[in-house]
Image (cartoon, rainbow, N blue to C red; front, side, top):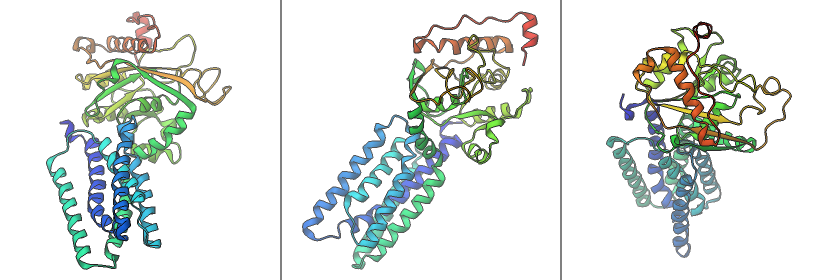
Length: 401
């Protein structure tokens, strides 16, 4: 599937396009209201509108995560609706109060853009801008009172709030959660894998698993939406299930993996759709100090057998062991203090495509991938773990799952 046809990318693009069309339709009518002030204040109000819009449009580009920058749109839409409500009630339309949220919306939409935009969508934006200009011209020709443009921008802002909160809820959710994560952890990233990490197209991220929050740490450092696999124990929690389903998280049943396990088929389908799938091949959380990495299960091999050309990024998460949600000194959340500014590192190696001769057997593949994850420790200044080798026959039979 071409990257531009990926359902996830297409949905993000259409969500952004819808918001941009609403803004393009409304801005000309809003400009009529902003400059409808005494002549001596008209220039200043217009400059405030343009200046704050340009300045605010630059702010999303200072935020490191392109995909989560889209979460600024629903928040700015609420601010713009409030400014319009103020204008309708008090009859005041300060340029800065409208320029700031609109600039933030436009900047966030530009920052979050992934992949190429097809020409019909570009044409739709130009068409919306022309239509908006036509509406504004008709309002000016009609003359005062400007009830029509006031009603039009109010309608546009209400539609924008509903559209953005419905279509961009995931980046909004991640954006709101990030400050909480910042209070709890100091996450740093290191490694060559970040340099050319693809913002579109299928890829598989594998990592060690030491605590509950490992998927969140990866989401923090990677520049695109992730599709992780989550055990049913957490996926099925009340209110949590609908959220996970909406985010496209893959549910893993609480049972041993089988060859035709539905979660593996879902992971393969997600890769077919051009998504970034995250898997912790150990299958469960680290349990002891002396065994930082357990033998990988067959699931990751089955995924790669079905999609042998998938680029694989190996990651090592350091600092999760010993955290509040790890099995250090007891079950997660037991016998440990809540984390506060705990240092964490996520090393990421350059993508590799597993060689066909390695994929011929599951044990060779699993051992190879374990060594890749171990090597991802080096960017964090950690020595790799002792080289993993193919197990003896008896061990292989015991750990064939």
